[in-house]
Length: 242
Ligand SMILES: Nc1ncnc2c1ncn2[C@@H]1O[C@H](COP(=O)(O)OP(=O)(O)OP(=O)(O)O)[C@@H](O)[C@H]1O
Image 1 (cartoon, rainbow, N blue to C red):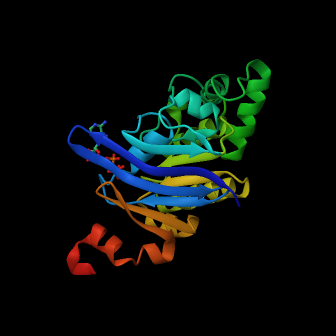
Image 2: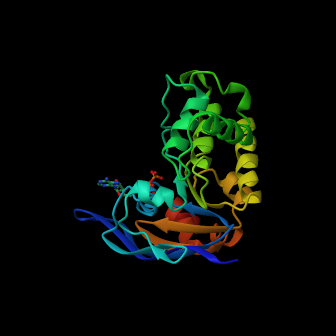
Image 3: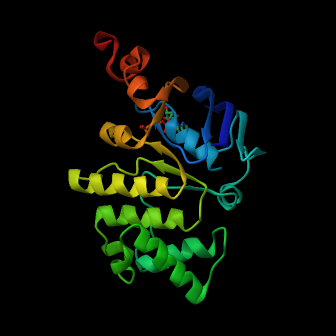
């Protein structure tokens, strides 16, 4: 394996609040890694800095050895980083295929017309949505909206995929489908950093987990061990549970 992403001393301050405090970690190509922590611990802010939606206050991010900290989201997307958002960002009046085509038109490859439609159908079938290609996006069920969002992210042909609570709100059957879908990304060699609160999913998907609390990284290692780490248990449940 080789290093794809590295964060060194990454810091983000919002006024007097240090949301991310000197966080360092790296991801090897092909890893699926969980980024965990209680509410407000800084996870989404880390994703926002990696994907260029927020500039860091300090520290450095490299992708394939190239510095990307401070570049804008379009630039970073073209370098191979795609993400999903906590709230699905779809264009509801367009069809499902058109939503993916929009991502393709502005993505890494800039595909148009019939080529873009073929590519969109390819990405939709990868997430099990080929049969819904011509429906308005606004008519999709919640899990199908999630699938479409994933197809849009995959349309960017990412090397690194950042999933921000992509499994949140799914029922147990949908959760199993969602986990299988993420596993299929692993089979395709895509590196995934997964912000998630659903622990069963973390255990099923992530060999390694990084845990944050109050802006700092407090654990990084095999998931089964990090979840038992006393500092992690304390961060989630309070002193009485350690
Ligand atoms: N744009 C912003 N301006 C000011 N404060 C912010 C901003 N974004 C996040 N914060 C604050 O930074 C801290 C970390 O927030 P962040 O959303 O990164 O946490 P999180 O771990 O992703 O939480 P959750 O699990 O609830 O999504 C919080 O205190 C939050 O209120």
